[in-house]
Structures are given as structure tokens and as C-alpha cells.
Length: 369
Image (tube, rainbow, N blue to C red):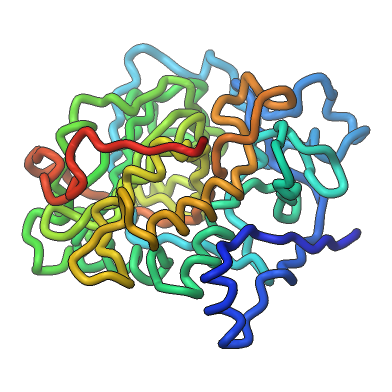
């Protein structure tokens, strides 16, 4: 086992601020290339490598799909669960949440995407796990607590915002070779500011843009009560009464253990979700956040704080936006992973995304050049 030092690109003004408090970002050391998780269609192995141990990145970290004969068109069990907690993990000591999205153990292995200029190689977490969004958050949060584990958990437990995961066309048994998984972004608990009980009776408001099942897949299965689903999906931090930040993860994966016992029917435990966050979706989503440096401003447009934050994000992309371009495409997206727990829930009213989420205007956009 070897360790590597990674350097996150940080703008000069932030480096000076961090240096004043004696904080160093240069020593983010990671162990590399243990047995690893990869993403494919229904068999989770590295393409072009057989799972015979020849390459450590070929090993599966999720169960294989059971035979399709375990599934039936008459399967009718539907589960709906609301995220009750999330975990970011920690770059220095773990735990490490996410997946080997690009099927490489970068450092000492090769990059899975092409870098330009002097952009440094982006080393994976142990096991080849791709989660550079966490590293970006850690860097930014040293300067100002923008997106933190505590903030997201506070939003969930207070009912301020949420995420709903639905499993349908399920047989309710240990194995089902094909189920449908749908993700709904939630604008909060129906009775907010009263906090949710997380006992299966809570109704959660659904964001209109996700209400019709736009983020749904049949490329999902259950193996020994372990849910595995490949799809793109949104996460909302904030709600209709604050400034919602929308995290749009593409080409993602969700895994979780389904608890089908009477006392906890439909609860999801030991969950992990991950995917690729395109800066063209990442950057505009930050505009709802008040500028922590300039009163009355927001993180968009000509804001100096926003421009420096953009520089951090764009300097630390580590994967391509599409799995089809892994190995050949540009490093133009940011990987992300979260641990989660979810409890049974009910659908509430359907609401449009609030206008407060677009202070720079509904058509304002930005991307890395």
C-alpha cells in the first residue's frame, strides 16, 4: 500500500486567508488501490478485465444481479423512503463514500480522463473511490461553511428539504432481478417548521420538476435485500422557504440495504449514492446562496467570491461527464459520493422550484471554460 499527496487548486486570496490560520491543504494524503467498486450495466466489473484478480480494480463491491426469472410483471410492492441522514466522510481519515465511477485506481494507476494545462492529477480515495466533490467542499468550508454535512443533516431532520427514493415493481423478497427506482427531490416536510417524525407518517413536498418520475430507471435490482440502481438523480439542499441548492448527479449509482421486517418495513440502511456533477449544473445551482463576503450578494455573476469558488471547482474536475468517454474524454466533471440512511415516508403536495433560487435570473448559466 502506498500513499500519495494531492494538491487541490486554491485561489491566491484564499490561500493567504488559510495560511493566516496555519491551515495546509497540501497534505491531503490518500491510500490507493484496495479492492474497489465499479459501475457497469448489470455486472459491476471493469470493462476489458475479467474478475479473476488480475487487476484489483476489477473486483465488485456490489452484489451481482439475480436472474431475471426472480422478477415478474405482476410484482406490486412499492416502497417510498425519505433520507433521514447523510454522511460526507473525511479525506484525511475516512470513512470514504462513493463508487469507482471511472473504473480506475488513479494514483498509482492512470487518470481516466484527459487534463489540460498544469492541472494536477486527481488521486482517488482508497479503493479507487471517486469523490472529489467532498474534497472541494472541505477546501471551501475552511474559508466559509458553504456545504457541510451538518447543514445538510440539519435540513433533513428539521424538514427543511429532503430526497425521496421509491422502489416499485418489487416482489418484496430477498431477490428481484428487475425493479424500478425513482428519485424525487423534496422541498421539505409538509408541516414544516414542525419537524418530521421519521416514523412512516411524514408527508414530503415534491419538487415539480421531478414529480412525474423524470429521474427513474428499470436498471435496478435487489440481491439479498441489497438494492442496486443506476440512474441520474437530484438532491436539494435548502427548500422553498430558504435558498435551495440543487445537486444534479448524472450517470449515478444508488445502493442500500432494504429492511423488510414488520417493524421497519421499507427502511434503507448503509446506503451510498454517487455520480458525476457537471460544473455546468454545479455552478448555476450555487446562485441561491448568499455571498458570505459581500452583504446582499449571491454566488453568481461578477461576485469575487463566486469567481474564486468557480476557480476551485473548475481546477479540480476528476472525471468525464459521461462513462462512455472514460479513458479518452476530458476531465470536465466532478465526482461525488454520500452515505445515507432513509426511512418510510409519504408523498405530499407538488410545488414548483421557488423563484428565490435564481437571484441572477432564471436563464443565468455558467460553466468551466
